Structures are given as structure tokens and as C-alpha cells.
Image (cartoon, rainbow, N blue to C red):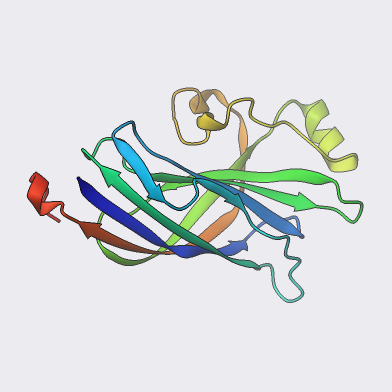
Length: 175
């Protein structure tokens, strides 16, 4: 089987109006993909930027997949959260990006968004915190129901990904 090795890090996030950010991440693949080593999801630590608006996480990603086909190429999905001084967490944004399909090192910038909700929910979010969240996490990376949502732009998640491909030529895939 052909193999894909994804090595890199979630560098951090910028452009969010909130501070004290952390990120929950995961990877989604099709049925023909098998995870040989690594973990499919994780969470970074909380970072409160002292200078500027960039929150640095430097969270490692190390995944090794075997695949029988190209359908369902891996997609990274993110949930960025902010934490207040009382330890309450509030959604800052959802985002996803496709893992590059060419070998080498790649710098990725993943834009994020969050659901707006009604004017009451927006007012409550401003004063009390919280706000609307997605019921199903797969809505982040599947466009089927996402077009119906009213959203607001969030910040950007920055990644550095190195990609190694192995045995693709044996299965008729030219890289």
C-alpha cells in the first residue's frame, strides 16, 4: 500500500479578537486510509500573547498513513477556543485545511469562522460568554450543511507541515 507521513506542527494562531487561546485539532480521512502511527486528534496548551496578537502553541503533529487510493485525502480540522480569567471556555472559531498532496515542507494558513446565531445569542455572547456551537463536528469539513450557516470570520491557524510519500509510483500515482 502507498504511505503518507505527515510531520509538522501547529505553530499558533493570529487575528482573533479573544486572547488566551487553545486549539483542539483532528484529522479526517476516507475509508481507504489506515492510521499506522500517531494520534488522530489532540489539544494544545493555552497561550496568552504578551506582545502582538499571535498565540504560539508549537504543537507537534506526527501521523503515518497507509492508503489504497487517493479518495478521502487527509483534512486537518480545528476548533480554536478562548479561556477567560475564570477558566470558562468560549468558541473562537472553526476551520479546516487539506493536507498538501506534494512532498516537501509547506507553510499553511487556515482561516477560521464561527456561527453567529440570533441577535439574542450574539448579545449574550458579548456579556455572558458562550455562544452557538455546531452540533456535529463533521460540519466543519463537509460542505453539505455549512452553506446554511450565518457566520463571522475568526482568525487564522498557522501550520508547518512536512510531507513524505512512499510507494505511490507502485500504485500508478505520479507525484
